[in-house]
Image (cartoon, rainbow, N blue to C red; front, side, top):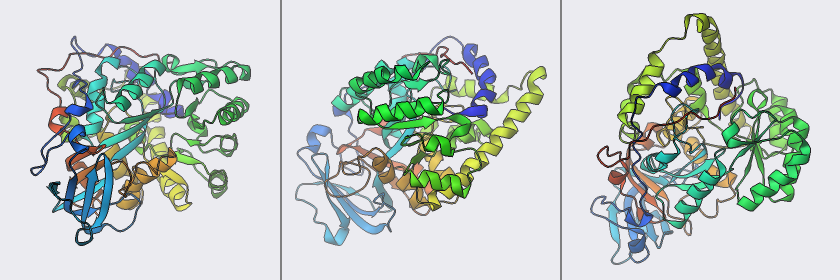
Length: 483
C-alpha cells in the first residue's frame, strides 16, 4: 500500500468511489486446475502432464537469461518435466528426438516475470476489495507473463489459501509468496489487513503466529515507532523471518534502515543523500521499486486514459470497471477541496519524480532492487502494471536489461530463490515468456506476449481472457481504510 502524505491525500477521493458502481459485479475468469492450461503456439501444445513426458524445444529465439548479460541472438531452450534441460546457442543445443518444437524466429525468450509488491484483494482503487474475483486478477497476472508475485499485505487466511491452492495446482495463478497481515501501530491504516500493536510486548506473539502460519516475510507498516520496529525485526530474525517495511515518508531514512529490517517495500519519495544511501548499502538492504504506484498518485498516466485499450488491460478487465475508472478521472474535486487537492497532487508529482531519481541512484550504488507495483490502484492493474513498471525504470535511466533483471533474477534473489527460478539456466524451473521483438532494446516489447510457460506447461492465454458470458458478476465492497 502506498505511503505517507501521498496515501492520505487521495483518501477522500477514493472513498467517494465506494458507492460509484452500479449493481452487478466483477467478472472473474474463474479458477481452473493448472492441468487444463494448454495452448497452441506455432503448432506446439502441452499440459503439465504432457510436459512430464514430452520435451519442448524453443528454437532460433533471442535468449534473454534474466541476469543482465548480452542476449544470445539465435538460441534454443529445451524444457522437460517442468525443468529447463538446456539453454544456449542453437548450433550448440541438441533438440531431443520427439520434442515439440516452437519456432522462436523473430521472438525473444525471457524468464517468467515477477511482481514483488501486489495486494491480491481485488478492487481497482486501492481501497475497495473484491475477494470473490480472485480468479480474474490471478488470470490477468498470468496473461501478462507474471508467473510469480509477492503479496505484501492482505487478509491473512485469504492469501494463505490462495498460495496453498496455486502451489497445489488446484487453482490457476502465479506462484504466490506472501506476508499475510501487515503489522501496524495502535490505529492501523488498513484495519482489515493488519495487526494493531500498542506495545512491543505483543510482538513475540504476533511473530509466532506469522511463523506458524508459514508466511514468507513479515511486513511492518508506518504506524510503528523505530523502537517497536527494532523489536519486530529482532523477533522475526530469531524465528527465521525477515521484515520488509513501508514507513511512508520515512522510507529510506537511516534510523529505519538501522532497525534490523531487510528492506523497503517502496522506493523513497524523499531526497536521498549519499550518506543515506550509504547506510542502506552498508546494511545490505533491498528495495522494491513501485514506480507505477507513484505514477498512479501523480495522475500523469491517467491524464490520457487511452492506455486502457491496451490488450493486457482490455482483455482481462470488465467494462464496468473501466467505466468507473474513467468516471473517477473525470470527476473534479469538490469546490471546497479544490485548493488542497491541487496541493496534494503537486506534492505527489514531486514525490514521483524523486522516486525516479532514487531508482537510478540506488541502482548505481549497487543495492538489490526488485520490480514491484503495489497494484491495484487507479490506472495500475495486476499484470499490466508490471510492464509499466519496467518502462518507468527505463525512463529513470536503467537499461532494458537492467529492468528485466529486476523482474526476474533479482526478484528471485530477494526471495532467496535464485537457485530455483528467475533466470534461464539448466536445472531451474521452466517459467518463461516468449515475446515478439527485442525487449533488450525496446522495453515495451515485453508486452508483445506470444506464449507463457509455467512450470514447463504452455499456458492457454486465450482461456485467461475475460469472458462476460461465463464470468460471475461480482462488485467490490468498501474496504477498511483509516487515513
